[in-house]
Image (cartoon, rainbow, N blue to C red; front, side, top):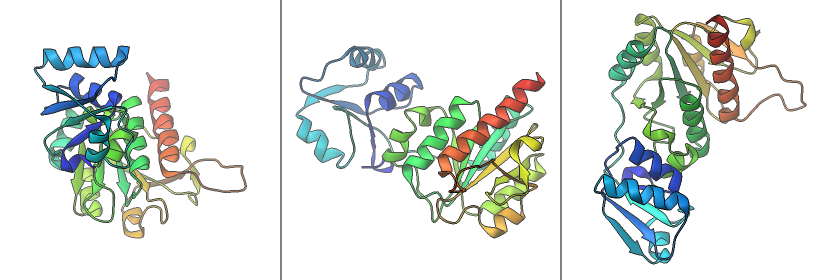
Length: 249
């Protein structure tokens, strides 16, 4: 069951939603579920006046089929995306060197969730996804993001190339990841306002979008398979961007 249909599942994701003071309608807890982490979660829910209802575990299985819910599910209003223009302005207000990550046709919710987790963990300001031919913010994404979706704004746009044009007008440099790029990521200055573009699992960054980018970079590879999972590549590249910025402080 995805977040657009109104559920967050798992202890970590629900705890982070409570910490972020996201609106929760009700928490459903499997009868007999107990742990120290749950006690802290339930105390926070009580403090925020979120109702908690005990139900049989099979009820949670029916609510969220094919998802490991860990005995706890929260019903929530449908996920709201951040307005793209607001995301851009807010990121520039937070820092002189914001980092946004744009994903092009990522279809695996685990990949998108892992990218969001890396953005949050390494200090990025947000994520931009396309409205079409890509996974939306589903519960699978939220689960893979380990609760960080409550802290990372995600904007959804109709046309990534047009979004890039606006970002350039606002002073961002656009760097796409491509395994065939001439330049290695650590050979390029990745400081200042930056958008990192990560391509989909099968096709990479689309041709028109890649042509709109200022920089094309790759990671050094020595194995026989000259490519990485999209979320792994994104995590390494985000780390390199943050490493460069920390080194200059």
